[in-house]
Image (tube, rainbow, N blue to C red; front, side, top):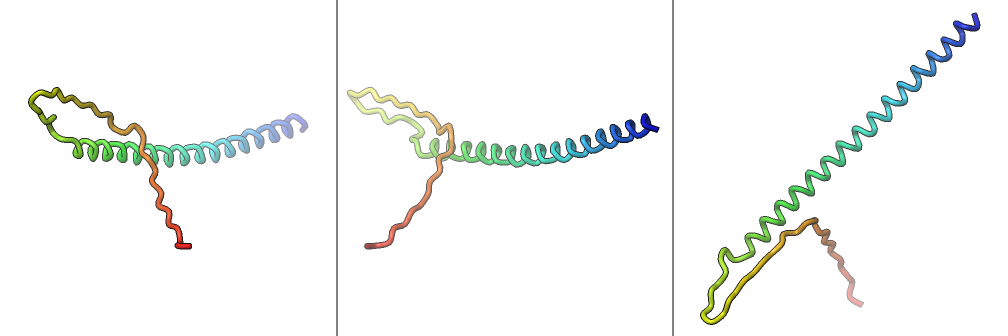
Length: 90
């Protein structure tokens, strides 16, 4: 009787722990999916910012007689956050 009662308690504990672990796993999977979405959006923003920067640059470096002209550029590595602020007149 005591053995079967002990087995029942242990069995209940195992089932309860499994249930809690499944719930936590679901929470982690949801958080990971949300984070993956954010990373994808940032990568798309970076690609777009890189394209905009490239489009703003001249396609070739102008050549001026008597001068040697060179240039270099580096695309953005992280998207910047721009916030607009307004102030009321005094």
